[in-house]
Image (cartoon, rainbow, N blue to C red; front, side, top):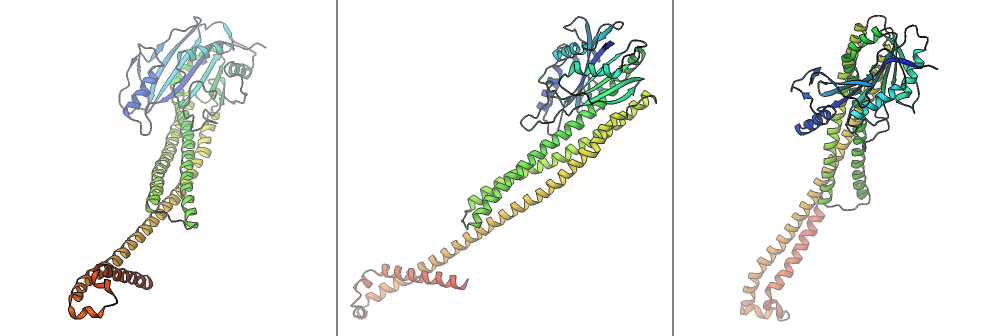
Length: 444
């Protein structure tokens, strides 16, 4: 089956964060440097430190590149959308008159990937494939689009959303870029097999040339889509972190409760160590909870921007277009992403209350242990004070008493009393101290 197009063109739209939550100036500069590595070394880069919805950051805005394959042509187009860098890399067959096989997209994709740093940490990317049919062609646009797709991604299934754009047929295939990733792999590189693909098959050259006027609109729309997906994935990582923090605190609490159930005496140092551990984890838990709310706000802002940009594209394209399939993503964000995060925030706030209660209980135990120590110390002071006072009071009178000649015959059977008055006074002091301790214990 013939499956040919005129002027097959492949555009890669990729997005990199310039700044994010708690990004330092040094990190921002590193992000900027990593993004610049995607462009030719002699690129004139101008990124003014201003907040802007859309800023072209190179001069000239469109920079042609020299392809490895001389039958190709292409260019870079770099912008900044608020806190995010966007880069469009366009590559096409340098022939607008002869038909080309759909497998040409494999060559175009290879050329683009050779131009880029595959280790660049991106938040999202979209592949846009396009071309036009021969006049009066009998080929099925969907068959051609399917072959174009398999020229880029062989080991995937063809399950597109369908519509029309500028009298041409448009197909969308979206797979989450972040599925099955975890905290151990929290960056997305150009090597990822996950992707978002738009394929447009135009009926003629005029429609394809008019479509080029929409590149800036696609740049914005795909950016908002990427940021929504990125923020939702970040919220999953934050939730995982929150659950890990909660499990750590639960382990500390269970150890403490087990010791109490066994009536094991824990000293204040042990309690304070547990409290410090829990307090440290709770601080990170609180930060993560705020971060979860922050990701929700990112989704809400970019969802609004996505809907506005899509409405502008529809208005600009005219009435004879069917782009409603692009609204399914905004419905996904509204019906799944935001409700899920709201539920997570609600659950994690309950967890925060439980963690705070755990800290309060641990602090109470420390205070109880501290009070018991202070009371024991007071007991010791009282008993020792009574004994010392008794020794002090008895020692001097005993010497005076034994020195009197008239009293010497009273203790003939206790010869050591007068010889060792301090020892006998100490013995009486110990007895008095014991009586004081016994009486305080009985009267408590």
